[in-house]
Image (cartoon, rainbow over all chains, first blue to last red; front, side):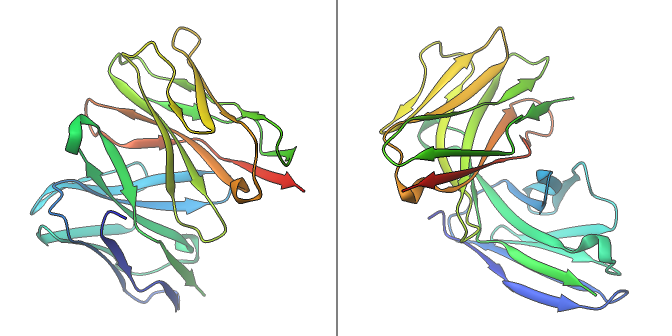
Length: 114
Length: 115
């Protein structure tokens, strides 16, 4: 358990509404990531952060924005949700402790856009 | 660009038997890690095993071991003495330590354990 929580865990919303997902970590990791998981695609990177206010795009960033105003929180926003954004969203942190580089994942958020 | 391919969408094995899940990858970088993650029905992503590309010795974690063939860009997972709790989706992932440093995942293999 890398101390990662996500909220909400489940959300149903309507097309065109804004949605914000929150990832919270308790262990002061510098790198944080947002992935989405869809059948047949594994997990794909949306955005990542390498420090407070330092973020960059992943391979499927269109329609998403992120913010990181403090180390422990990384927010993912869908400005105007679309049905194609129905997915399971995972937050992850990079742990470089002990000489290893590993990513640990939060429990996921299932988002349904009607 | 990096890619990871898992060519077996589904596999099944009898309890207590051994099963091997296949993974191939492609990268032009020399410094990278490879991982196998397990995702049970709870949806939690669980790290199973890690392999550093610079290490020639294959990684082992209890009943889980890998066959890392760097030249062939192959990274298979062997599960020995399969248990019912091993039933899950398994994802192979590549992490290149340059640039964006993101994990690139394969499509996954669903493993069923038959009692």
